[in-house]
Length: 243
Image 1 (cartoon, one colour):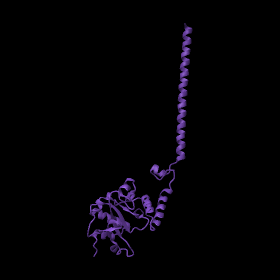
Image 2: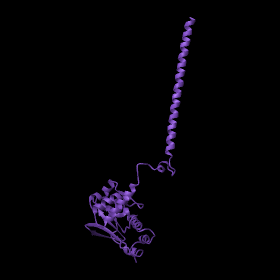
Image 3: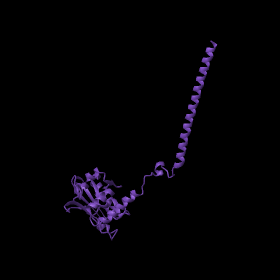
Image 4: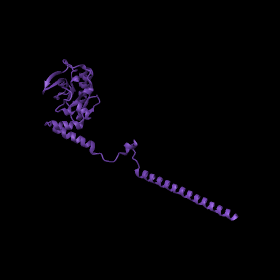
């Protein structure tokens, strides 16, 4: 008989992918223990969860959020690599779904303000200030792809090499196909292309027609002015002749 809550066991046996199960379990935990989701973020490879297998969640949490975690019955609190860690290992239960799985766990590290791993640049406050976090569908904050690339290069562990290559490829593909031209469908809101040549010629023709009309009106006004002057001179001459 598992010691895990029925809600977590139900998630483990669901048809969701592995990373979705982990995210749902984390959401269950933060909801159950009333943890403010703005006070923690998922570090590590969560940003590439759609592109490679994710077996665990590593979380950096502010001390006041961390201190709401259960002290018994669910997970353990221990000292790990000189850090205070809450660790929930669910691998044994998950093996009933996937016997080949070697890890299925969530771990959360207690951090003070301005404290991050491996440096203060990765503290929650610093990452928020630099807009370096994204948010998933469950409200979990996590390192953006660009932040994750910087973090993995700084960690520079042997296991990070393939992830660095993957992230660089993803970032290149996300920007490499763009150019200075704008997609017509984005402008019009439809899939029909804009007939730029026809539109431009029509625009030029309308301006030409307007110019000619103005010139014609000026010519008419000029002729009327000349005519009025001629009539005035004629009337003046005849007036003096009559005298």
